[in-house]
Image (cartoon, rainbow over the protein chains, first blue to last red):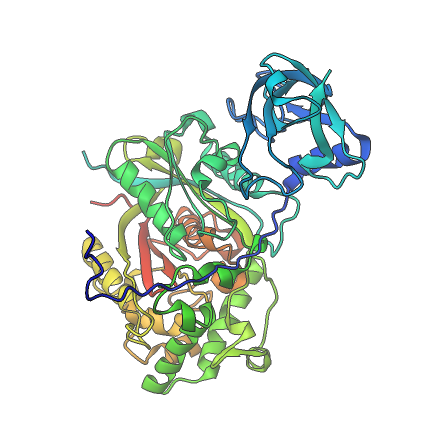
Length: 154
Length: 385
């Protein structure tokens, strides 16, 4: 293999693809984010047939394909279902977050599904599955998932 | 094992330039619910799903999985097919293969696009070869413009001939409540609209749309139980290739000529001009409406302008083309080919309301993609032999 380039000048073309996006949040996500931004409330949708409460809210129940018309308030407190600690500062981690960054799947009281978010105000070695946590809202809220700043131990 | 296949229901959204009220999943859901209602079926009746849209347009790669809230595909066999501009026709042909194989009885087919979410030309550029074509590429319209220039030079056609096609499609769109652009234009308005790339004026080309379409196919064992007058698929053809931009026979669409000859042979059609009753052509710009119907064999080379000036392809003419207003009126790209299919189905079923062509026996629908590839479907009101 050491002579694979013998007599060859490999040509490489470098390029970037520039495709700017703007995604419409849609009817369901918009309701959730407006309520979060303006009222500091976490809400979900409920399937009238299965009684399941979805967070993030889903417009249609994936199990029975009925429209989830009912909105319910969900507690700011919940339970850590699982978590991990990121130790490398990869580009995908927002620049304002410095490792170690703790991610948790948090099932809030009143929801049947967990949501992905950050854990903070706790050392990584002290996080446990099953621990109780509470949402800390951002001072300046813009209608994104980061209007919740992170979850901290209760 | 091979089964005959029919379309038993269709649904589409009301297409707009921007649909800020819904995200992609919710848009898909609108079309799916309408198709299920049209066929009087429930989601649990669906055995498999085929979905497609344009790569990079929404920047979501695993659309088959991501879309399930809208498509109903949770824990069902669902695959994504994407072939550029032909996507909407390719998903229909893929669904036809699934049902025709005998392995699935009822298949839901979805095409969708939220064109408003990205830069169309930036995304389309990614379809072209990075070493040869991309560095000197001038966008999607320029290739079409080169085709039109070559056609005009070869057959002595004019910009007015192209404009006449646009006037027709925009007039037809007035009859279609789902169309995005519903405004009649005059020949003079088309010719006076801004020149985008010689000889294509703004009013010669399609818009960008947000929209979705869904079609349900069923095997011959159950099609007539679901729908008293299903739309039978007589034949399909696909011609895909990669053309370096300099490879094409500019002024002729080789993929359309070869594909349509295959279609006519499979169905035993000798004179498509007389035997077809309506055409829903994936025609993103006016000159395609001249060139490509010659490649289909509707008329001979260079004869399309006179045929169209004589009103033969208008509503009430010998062979109406694009009663829906076609792509020039509505273009959610990944859905566009499937809208052609659904509109042809509605013509066969007699459900096309204000845009209905009387007594449709055979209808033709197609898809077209930017590197000169073409997909097509022959629809009929009788069960194929």
